[in-house]
Length: 378
Image (tube, rainbow, N blue to C red; front, top):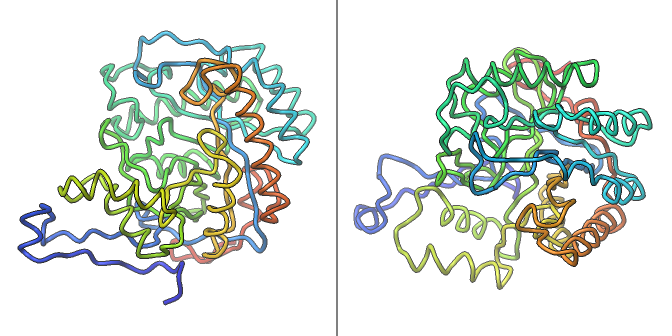
C-alpha cells in the first residue's frame, strides 16, 4: 500500500516484552497514518491544489500553567493586531480569529474586527475556554479546562453562551469552532453538527494532553477530513506532524514513544525521540512561528505534500503579539524575531511550497467532495 494511505500498524508484543513494557497483549497500539482515529464517521478531505489557512487563537491573556476559573486575565494582546495583520495581508493571507468569551465582551476589539471584516481582511470564529465561559457549574480544576471533559449538557450550555455572544457582536452565528487547549471530547462533534457549524479546528495530531487530564491525540497523524452523521463538517486540525528521512517506520516509532501509555524503558522514552529529532530521522514539527521557523516549515511541508496532505493551517496565539504573555515572546527582541519568522514562513509557504492562502471558513466549499457517513456529499 503506498505511503500515506490509512493502513494499520500492529504493535502487539510477546509476553516477555509485555512484562518489560507493560503493553497489554489484548490491546493493539495502532499508529497508522490515520488523521481521524477519534472520529468513527470520517473520510479524507483533499484539495486539487495546495491550500493554507491562517488561524489565530484570539484569546484573553492568562497563565498557561493555570487555566482555571478565577485566574486574573486581560484582553490587551488583542489590541495589538496591527503588525500581524499587515504582515499576513501583505502575504495575501486572510486570517481567521478564533474568539474567546472575554474577547467578544470587549466592544473596542469587536469594533476593530468589524472594520477588518468589512475590508475582507479577516474572518472570525469562536474558541471555547471553559474557565471564562458561563455558566460556571464545574469545579475549578485543571481537567475541566478541557471542554470535552465537561458533562455533555454543560459543554452545550457553554457553547450556546459563546455562540449567542458572537451573534450579538457580528449579527450571525459562527461557523468555525475551536475547543480551547484542544479539548475535543466525545460529545463535541455531535454538538457542532447539531448547532450548525461547518468547520472544527480542535484536533492536535501527534500530541497528548493526558498529563493534565485532557485528550490523547498521539495516535493521530495530520490530515483534514469530513465528519458528521447527518451532514458534512470539515475537521481542520492543528498542522503538526512527524517528518524526517526515516519515513513511515520512524513516524510510527516516534508516536509510539510519545504515546500516553509508552513503553517503560526509560532510556527509549527519554533519549530516542530527541536523538531522532536531532538527526532529523523523525522530528515533530508544528506549522507555526511560535517555536518554528521557515526551514522547519519547509521540511514539514515536503513530507505532507509527498503524502498528499495538501490542506494545511498556520497557527499562532494572540498572546504572541505582546511581550511577556507566553513562552514564545518574552522580550522585545523575541517579538521582532517572531514577526520575522512569521513573514519568512508565509513566504516559504507561498513561493517555496506553492501554497495558495485561503480563509478557513471558505475551505468546505473548496475541497474535494467524497463519500462520508454512508452518503455521497452534495
